[in-house]
Length: 113
Length: 112
Image (cartoon, rainbow over all chains, first blue to last red; front, side, top):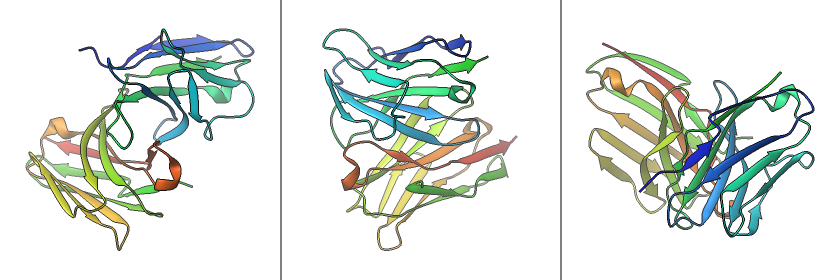
């Protein structure tokens, strides 16, 4: 039973380009969460999705950021027109249900040049 | 502002000693969880304690929860060099749906 899979592991983008981060939850998990982490800091919640629905996106910037979790395929976190301040580690987690423990992927380290 | 705040921010101990980390939070919770993160890796779930529980054990880990003080502690007994990592508490306030809110973490270093 593979864990939460994120790719790419590292992503380098120039300012103004688009970044697409992918997350495949654990088998059987229908709840997906995206978090962002800056060096030496904790994780900041971004968005919570279930299949085909955004449940809570209160932690996601209103502009340039979007997320989806389609019926088929991985969850995608998309950052348009990246800026240097977007550089961070982005972690995806999944859970089987509500109020359950989260299983995290290894993260995508985004570097914006 | 963060729901959970860990204390201390950094802790350095010798192998064999016990390590205690504390977490304080601000609102009511459904449960509180502790996670561990090795450098550059994702978080690994350690233990979950529900709001109606006061203490929980898992191997060398002991977690307490005091809802009246809105605080929790994580104790690692007989620490090993391999315990070196960052430790985060996470809470899920009822008002926050199902997403966890993480504190800033305690960076633990265990010297051999």
